[in-house]
Image (cartoon, rainbow, N blue to C red; front, side):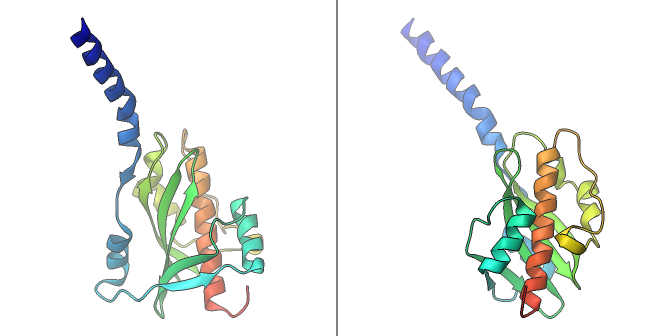
Length: 176
């Protein structure tokens, strides 16, 4: 009987932990994305310090205060890459945004931690962001179609896209 209890406990713990093990999916590392974008000439990372004015605008974009006081990014004369994290429903989504000429050129989900809504990583969804740019009030100049069951993940991806475009604009100018 004691052996049956142990087996039952192991089975219960294993089944309970299975969703946790499946929740974190890493699709691409930041290094792999940077290699795709910059080939073998990856620039040194730069830092955008989040001043009060930048934080105020970032808060309007995100709906909450930014979590950090500085943001790392990579850029050359043509493009910049921003790797950002934002909460989907309950867990962070890590995504990379490449910007060229003030427009989104490439978007990829690097890591997805939610149990549902992972469709935001598919190219069919992500291609909607290509060519998007900021218009007044730091909104995108186009509507991003949602995905049934992934509303909060789509919203997080769109907020990060807006933030990446805003950070790129600030980093390339002298004032926000």
